[in-house]
Length: 186
Image (cartoon, rainbow, N blue to C red; front, side):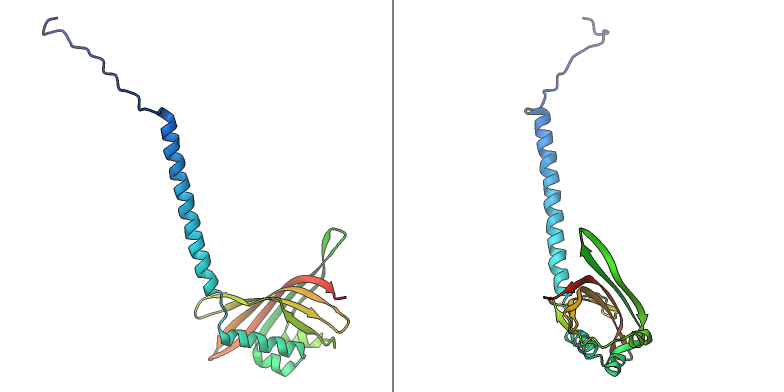
């Protein structure tokens, strides 16, 4: 070989031991770590939010006073606890023969609410603790599980969302949305 001839050499790179199997293992471990991190973050957020969902005493008292006034059909008390622009939106469903059917829908403002009242002597039972969402300055959305029954044992069982606002330093119910099922107590 003369000094003018190009030198050729072959270098063989050794294949890593384990080959593609080790690469897949590390990718799998990386994905699992990401899943664990995401689940940990979700648990932290969920635990934090559940504490934030607690209803302050003054708002819980407002909802309880409103429910008592509604149960007593005390128009003056309801007016004092509600904004003049109060609205209610109720959807009541019945489950029969494997079909869910809306059997009643009420949309009204506070005046229509009193015009359409009929004496049913209702009772209300709360189905669990209240929970709340909303910013520090409001409005606040308070979720309440409720069972309403009249003297005949007919009623509705479902969830109400009360919209609570603060006006001139006073807490008021601005609206109520209800969705539930028509029931018959035996």
